Amino acid sequence: MSEKLDDKSIVARIRQLRQEHAGKRGKAIFAKALGLSPSTYNYYEKDRLPPINVLWSICRTTGADLQWLLTGEKAVSVGNDAIPDPLHQKIVQCLRHDPNAAVVLQSFLDLLLRKSTMEKEVSPEAVPDETSPRHWLPILGRTAAGFIQFWQDEGDKLPGITELSELIDRHKQSSHRRLPAGRISHDAAQLPLPAIADSAASLIQLTEVNEEGICEFIDCDVIADRYPGSFGLRVDGDSMAPRLCEGDIVILHPDMPARDGMTAVVKLRDQIGTSCKIVRFDGDRVHLIASSERYDTKIYPQEQISWALAVLWRIRLS
Image 1 (cartoon, one colour):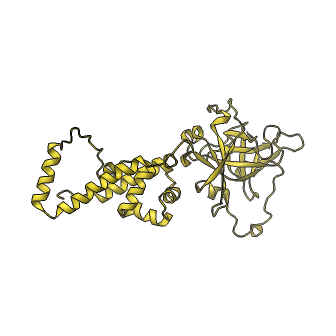
Image 2 (tube, helix red, strand yellow):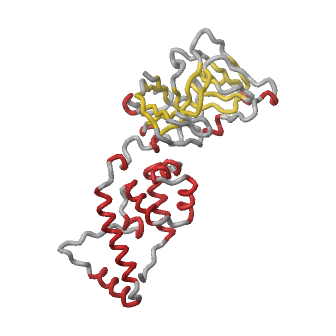
Image 3 (cartoon, rainbow, N blue to C red):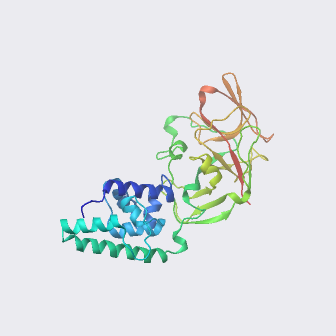
């Protein structure tokens, strides 16, 4: 035909569909939905136009229109079996210029007819619903609500230990089962956070873990839409009871530091893991206060605080 398809524009539209249906970091799960390996899909999205069977699969999975995917234009409905004049003129010009293009044109029209048939056969399971992975908040590990412990020496650290800070922006989505979440609460006086109904969040447990060992997510569109990049930690210990109990999940955001008087997850320099406490800032010192009277308040110089993130929400599973 006289006008060639723009490969780069098609790849850009594929990337747009993937982000809409699997999130900005959802290449792996989108590839799985298409029946491709992540590396193969990444190769296509980077700079290579996929073959027609993959384009079909993308349309079936996302519900996208093939004409839009190929051209960026929506299909125009035609009544009374009439061919619009502009289209008729282009077909005539194309065949005059290259009579052999009739074979290509016929194949393309057959493809469009097959597309219409296949769209009617798309199962409901192929249509993304409210459990879209873009709303999943990874639970990246645990935080201690007990005694604070430190490495005695740099050489004491076990080889292969992955710091929590390295996991914050890395997670994987996979097949999963959903469990009901329980009470969701926050300190309304500390931050202007929206209230979240119990039914608005669910615990997602993967059937397999990824290489970082992440196997749980919180599915909550309210949090994910307002605070993208949020993540969760499970609470170990009882120093924050009854405010926080062992097994509760706290939701944090890497750009939401703790304020004075807030419940926070704190990382001290050379600390083994992290600690969940109420923080009080006093000049160049920081007080880490437990809710339980069984635990003493600990005081550290501010320079020893690597980071302290506010606990935005507390989720107690039923």
